[in-house]
Length: 146
Image (cartoon, rainbow, N blue to C red; front, top):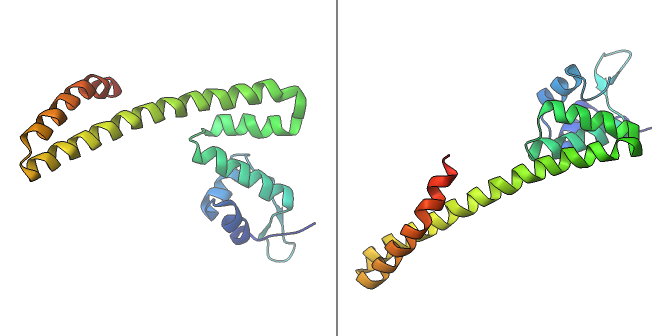
């Protein structure tokens, strides 16, 4: 079995050392073995795998409780497959909503840039087109603030 320091696991997982310690404290990781002489954490391959899964979940905005459930279900295996699917699909729906909101924001930014570009060039026709396009985007933009 490979043993790694907290620094090595941090580098490989993308989680900071304080986050790794916190995840151990709240029961998402570990318990992590300790070096008998120094007391330093010694991570195994399974610990690294769990840390990498947590890093992915964290990057997707999954909260601690869902992480806890997800990690517990990983140990259960197939019997928990339905719950794992439901957790992931719930977060996928949230990400879909975020993407839709960002697309509206992106459309707004591009149209506003086109408007200012038209003004910079003194192109009244292009400015009028940008204003019209902006008017069509504003209701969708306002919806994202609700």
